[in-house]
Image (cartoon, rainbow, N blue to C red; front, side, top):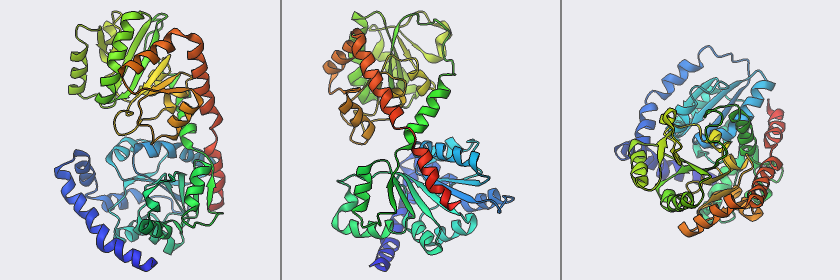
Length: 425
């Protein structure tokens, strides 16, 4: 059956991936960028590997995108401090690749090629890794099978597996049994994820629950963010700040009416709106929606600040620092495809609210269970909850303490992962 799955994958699925890369650029800008960047993938890889000290161990980290790579960073940085090694990093998406080129702890960066047997063999012949670490979920069959043949140790780190995962459907279950059986270690974020991986018939000693490096990473970043200064001292006086983070239009449709109503009754509140994609069109639409309702100014014009109630953030990369100024925060994506990172505001010990689409986030679900966060379903609920948070100091402090304690109690996954890696370096 194992041989059959290899044949089926390469005859039926690999051609679909090739077609995706051929047709996709005509319909999607991100795919177009990824295909263009991959044009000389192997030539660039040969050049970048030239002159590398091959006496050092080569550790390969693969992430699908930027979010997954953020989870790899605490591991990479600790490994670099502890060992004299080479770090090779690959991505599937352009966002991860392009935003990580200047990351100082990596030695070589590349896209992952299309998952053909020839490409898997070629990249492994060039890189010759001593250990390969896949972050969370982005693992490719031909690459995995080639790693198995060469007996190269390979891990999944920050691994998650839902009890209701489609991978457990009858035919897919057998395929994934074959796919997972070669992993040296599968390090899960929770005991439940461990249990769900064991359903694939994986040996018990391979699967271990160690926690989630997202907690370590967000804590590290929060310490650095506190040292960044975005505003002049005393600019907002004793005002209370509400941050609407990573918002999509679907979030703003619910949150903005509630915010505008709050501003009518509570002069102590200032609102930062941080669009997920601060395009010119989105920023102008936001400004238009606020005309005659509330005073607003863009972050880039803050030198001209005259006590405007709403600040629209037209810069990227500063959200975590903005949360450090907040008294409460809304986390976006939760009325669209799925919520963004709730740990980023939680680490600062502030109440967090969000919409109902939180199934993709164990952290959001847990914070709701602990009463550190609140779910809103409509404008009225949003207004009622944010007003209660800003009016009730005891409630605000209680929710904030729950959020911060939750983050601090879950720090430490990186050290446990390093302990597992130590045996292979």
